[in-house]
Length: 75
Image (cartoon, rainbow, N blue to C red; front, side, top):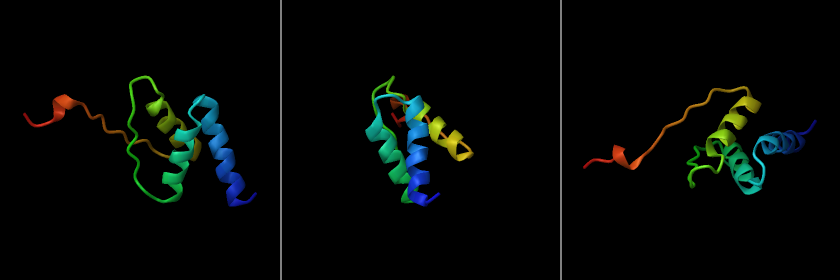
């Protein structure tokens, strides 16, 4: 299997747990291929954490998540 096919298959596996978020799955894969960090922002309930957990599970890797809320800002 070629690298392209592997990436497409990974996108499909992630897409099975996140329905209707094809653009986010594509951006997750682009961040992965660019060897960069990802900042996933959005409204509550848009499957951000589920997407990252699915990516980590499919890559057989560890998940590291930082929760940011406005109450953590300096006063």
